[in-house]
Image (cartoon, rainbow, N blue to C red; front, side, top):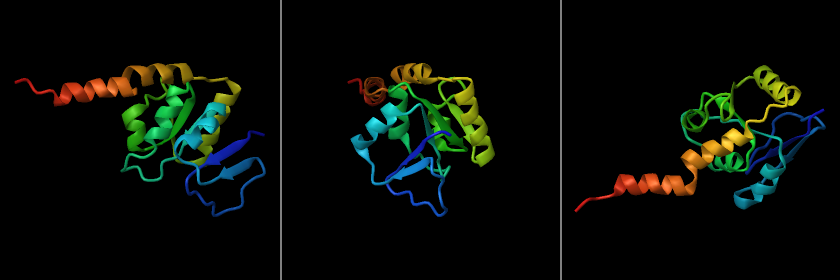
Length: 140
């Protein structure tokens, strides 16, 4: 009974999808913001666990106080998310994801505020700029 929107720049399903699922392709950049703002939960399925992909979407969701689920293993999950503290991690199986989504729905889990605090403390442009500045600082 949950509405699911798959927002992607290129996703093309290879199977028939249920009626509660809508796929919206060719979304990139700032076009994603209304969808992220309007969602209760954002899921980032990462196909290739060896590359860092999805940073912008994840950080945008965290800055907008959204609960996020990221599939593991993935570099993205390792870099940004502490499971059940500022987001949720899930193995790449349908059953595990469904259990986690059901838990979020039934228990009204909202890690969005903690995600926002984590974003502001560790990953905002201001904080990252300060870190880069300290790293490249040269004393003469």
